[in-house]
Image (cartoon, rainbow, N blue to C red; front, top):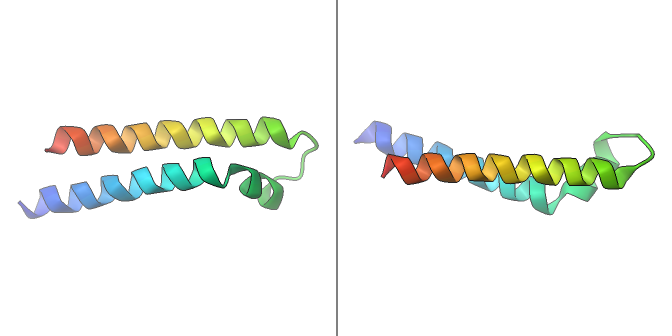
Length: 64
């Protein structure tokens, strides 16, 4: 029971991190990466954030 609660909390945190990565992709790209084409970096971070959010959601779905 306690392991299920801990795993669900971790998966919720993973989903939130993915959503934050999607929402703030352009700001993160400006702050941490210094290359010229920021649109490419922002779209890459958005794709990674989407995949992280999906993985966290699937973990949460299959726990319950």
